[in-house]
Length: 122
Image (cartoon, rainbow, N blue to C red):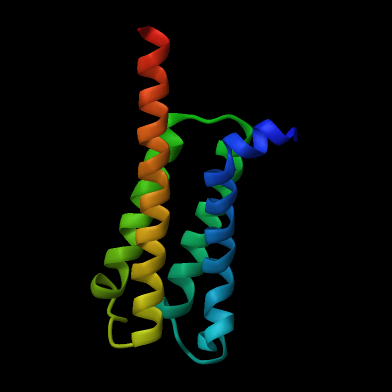
């Protein structure tokens, strides 16, 4: 990948790191060693989805992929409350903070993409 491409896609590389952290976080926090259920599987599954879409965006950026990433961020924010693990403080805050980061990254990318498309048509 050329340096210009890396510069243009830094938010996508960051998204890839967010996905990797989501997959690793239950193991880092020790939730994988307990009978944690949703506390473990929600970040792992959403993290895998974030990784898949981040790689897809790195290959060829599509607006709909950024919308999916935005939805995944929103899902991370509400998951502890809807799935009943809000009482596991560390897992809840990890989910909410990572949801804000994933959603914020996707929203920023959507903003940049829509402004680039607007400039191309003008």
